[in-house]
Length: 176
Image 1 (tube, rainbow, N blue to C red):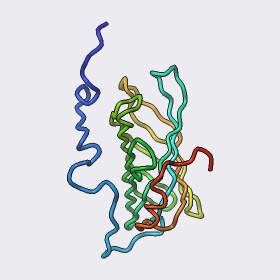
Image 2: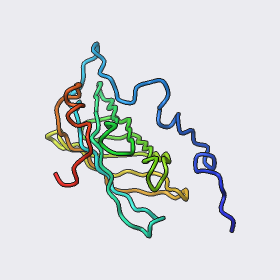
Image 3: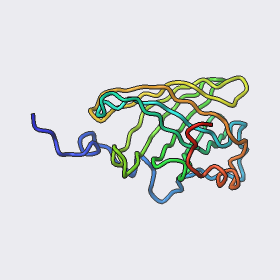
């Protein structure tokens, strides 16, 4: 069988720029000074696990510091650019302790996946103390298979202001 030389973007009709919203708008959400931000606004440590079928089924963990801005029930989440070589964004809705939405990742351009775009759905439960969310992601793989795994967000700073972003705009330590 001859392998199709088309990229995943071409095979599955994806638009890399549109999927990552890397056009003219800012990558990091900017708090609206006119809107009241919700109590989940802050810097969170994002951790998810995945299996790489192309690397013999090895399990990997990916971590980012992310800025989460809450307006009413909407959560906008974006990774801080220096926290990892890949970029993650999420658009979520919170209803009580249930958090549901979508995620997108642009992988490290110099890494194994060569800047590929992956996206899918995410559902998590928020703890009663509102400092941790844990659940599962689901999304497609390189071979157009459906994958899933655990994803957690842990609050590390109660502010999404410039000082907090600067403090956490660095690689996530491997043991914390």
